[in-house]
Length: 117
Length: 116
Image 1 (cartoon, rainbow over the protein chains, first blue to last red):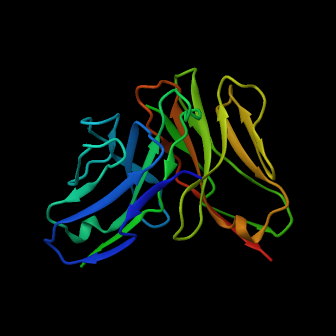
Image 2 (image 1 turned 45 degrees about the vertical axis):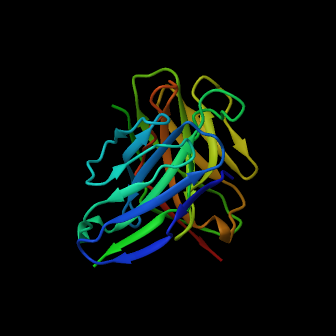
């Protein structure tokens, strides 16, 4: 399976705190994504990146922001967390054409469970 | 816009039996990929099987196989010889065949329970 890592796995924080969810992949994939998923529900794309210095909003509006300064790193930041941000956040990546290309397959990290109290 | 629909919120099967999970999708594209992902409770989303739309042959991965009906826009997953470890949420997903915009569109998911 793919080498994509997320930290922290579980986080409980108070309202108004700033948090950053880290995501790193070691496969040299150009494209990276953040999905949001409530328990037992479908996934919704909130951010994606085609490469370094590229970030785009996804289909679901989110108050979070992302950055892509290095190919392997795609952190997600919430400046002021609220209880409505409680959810699971899944980072993912995929390759362009090349040695690691595998048919537009997107690989996922283990997810970060965020609870805002 | 593409849509993916899984009409079975929950399914259950006896261990060692066969179960089929349904998925339909809507798209105007001719080049695309379809996927089944498995998400065990509190664990990583992993790829089960992938199908390229231009391939007529149904994809197979060990006990997992698909029935891809392109004209009907149907993509079902068959799990043979079900095992307890198969219990999970299963998501059907669509991705465009174009390189510029790879954004998975997911179905609502089907929760599969394996009865011992």
